Image (cartoon, rainbow, N blue to C red; front, top):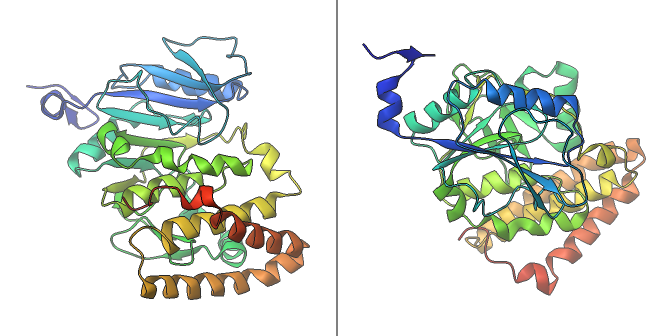
Length: 332
């Protein structure tokens, strides 16, 4: 009889023929949390063919080695270090990781299984667990960014015409289809990743901090007919080292960058996405206009109303530049 590991028989593994490699983006500053991540990779029940770490130029690799990880120095940037050709990787699947996640021993196996059983192009791990937020945090998310829960039987996360997302408030199964997902841990089929030309979205790095990068990348898969899913029981934890986001969170320009990025992402992925019509643009404009007004009281209370309006103004200017308008359509 075939041996079974976590309900995944050797026969099933052979039939699927899904192998994977791991690609991690880092600045090399996550310290012990990064070491824990590498140790958890060494314990995976299905081992990766390669572990390639894409570290920003000018940063030193950590002074420890856990396994057979390889380092590649590339240009700094959340998009630049994630949207890559991955020419070093020949596996049919790539597990894209941030440098501050902890995997359960069977996390990669669970994600491969979800990818295969559902014939998905990408499966993201739900590491932020919005549905488990307390009532106060849910209200805060609604007031400050129009992020609401939903009770869909199909979707984990939905992207709305105003550019905000909603999250499943009470998932009752492990896998749901989704319109976007978080980026700390995603299992991609490499051919699907290549098919949607994510390199066209590297413009987001120009803002100094690539706010909204996860949604921009994964919603593009959905918008181009790809099959995106979310696994709620992947066993992957977010250790939140904050190696890339700490400076952004503490920046006095945080609201300005968030607002500008949100406007530009909305414009590119929803308002002028390549399949837009006069009617779709009208509906999107009304939805975004309502959101703009909705957020004004929160911005006034925070004392950031000036930054908010500057972000909207400069976002509008940016999307009308020749460089931005020369980008290939979001929906190919």
